[in-house]
Length: 344
Image 1 (cartoon, rainbow, N blue to C red):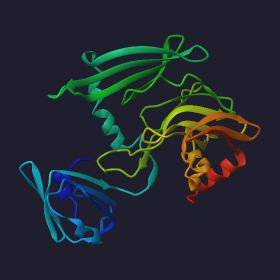
Image 2 (cartoon, rainbow, N blue to C red):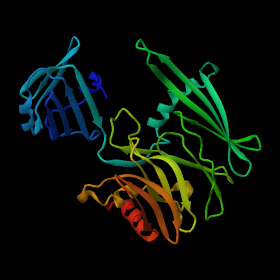
Image 3 (cartoon, one colour):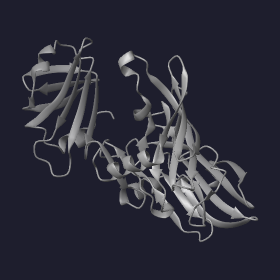
Image 4 (tube, rainbow, N blue to C red):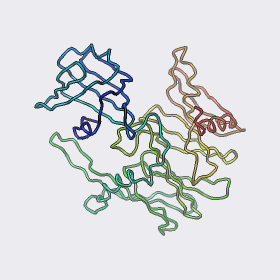
């Protein structure tokens, strides 16, 4: 995120501990730090780019003693500890927490407001297209797409709002409707036939997270994790982007294919004993099978193969070869339990 003067002035950076600092050869400083005394915010990040002066002495800093930023024409005048310099670009992020948050954002005010901002796009003047997808057992899903975009002075297409209205139908009758806040790929086509005897249809209301509707009762559970640490002005940070789903009826485990940050592609596994309140802690198979680092052979992607004989089988794509790997269900359950308890 670019520098925001209002956000900057709301924070007291004095006395903050610098946890990491990089000074690059093109006179760019990147600083990570923790607030010294703030019950709401946790940490921050600054990047000052294209600095006009030699700032290599900043590498020795441990604490931010003082900082001020003043806009001067097209540049910024920055006073940071014992240095004063000019730069043309500042990136800034102020974060609420560190690491990964499993908090469900779906029913929070923060997430609800982000959806309300784009609901105006459900208007005929923004209508883009309509598609119908066939599911199992006579069901279908209808997508109506609405997009508000424009070309800026450089001819670049800018999207103000992108909205999908989605309807689950049976024999043409609408059973359930929801909205998605971005263009998504076609819906998951298969129902999950759970060991509890019910059928569940997976769907997404956001790029992140996953939702399920009990096709027999029409009960719904939506889950969007708060995700990795991110600027506090956004409701969610990065989390696993699910593209395919593979449920094992015998173990009640579920494998998701997908990625973080658009790659690499791999598989994560979670407990799906209770589909309408599932355990969000997911085991990353990429970490388990990235086993050749000492030999400087790195894992690129992981694909799901099958659940079979009490094991999960995947195909691992290393730099110069592919290999089938497997892991037992008992090992996976133990790892999920440890993740849930915060042991790893």
